[in-house]
Length: 276
Ligand code: DAK
Image (tube, rainbow, N blue to C red; front, side, top):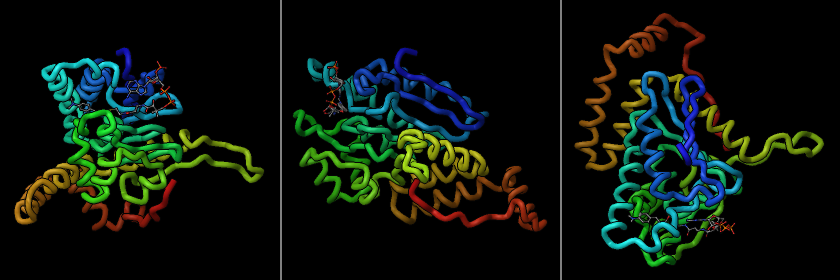
C-alpha cells in the first residue's frame, strides 16, 4: 500500500497513516487503503489495534482539501460515503481500536480519532473541527460523535467557532483519555519524546486489553456502542444478551475457575489510573 502501513506485535496490530508530506490528510487512496488494512486484520491473532499517523507533526490534518476543492455534489457524496464507510468500520470493528494522536487531528482527523474506542495523545496534539471556515459541515460524523463524546454544548462551541484546542483542553473536556509528555532523566535530559511516550502508552494499553478475555472484550464494545443508540430499557436487553453470550466460553470457565481455586496470581488487581 502507498499510504498505509500495518504491523503486528503479538496480539496488537498497528495501522499507520503514512502520508506525512501532506500531514497525513485523507485522500481517496488513503481511505481505500485504510479500508483494506482493516479488512486484512487477522482477528484470530490480533485482539487490539492502534491507529496512528506517521511523522512528528500530525496524526491526520483532515480530509484532503486539494482533492475536495473541485468535487461536484455527486463526487462529494461519493467521497463522503467512502470516508463514512471506513469510519463506521473502525467504530464497529469487532476488537477495540486505540487512536494514538500525535500532533494535528483536524476535521476528518478529529473525526477518525472519534471513531476509535479510546484516544491517547501527545502533548503537541491539536484537535478541532474547522469545517465551517471552509464552507462545509463536518462530514465524517463530527456533528454526531463529538456531541456524544463531550457534551452537546461543547461540541457546538467547537464546531460553530471552528476553534482548535490543545491537548490539555481536549483532556479537560473528555475528548482524550490521556496526554503523554516527554520524559526527562534526573539531569533534565530528554530520554523519551512525547511521541515515543505516546506509542509506549498505546502499546501498553493495547497489550493490557489483549490480555483480557477476548469474547468478553468484544461483547463489551458491542454492548456500549449499541446500547448508546437506544433507550435504557432496550440497552439493558442488549447487555443481557451479550452477557449471556459469554457463558460456556473457555475464558468464562477459566476466569471464574481461577477465582474459585484461589489462584492468587490470576486474581484481579487494583491498578491506579494515571495520565501518561
Ligand atoms: N488537505 C490537504 N493537504 C494538507 C492538509 C489537508 N487537510 N493539511 C495540510 N496539508 C498539506 C499542506 O498543503 C502542505 O503541503 P505542501 O504545500 O507542502 O505541498 C503540507 O500539508 C504541510 O502543511 P502546512 O505547510 O500548511 O503546515 P503548517 O505547519 O504551516 O500548518 C496546519 C499545519 C494543520 C495548521 C495547516 O496545514 C492546516 O490548516 N491544514 C488544514 C487543516 C484543516 O482545515 N483540516 C480540515 C479539513 S476539512 C465530507 C466528509 C468529511 C470531510 C469533508 C467532506 N463529505 C461527507 C463529503 C472532512 C473535511 C475536513 O477534514
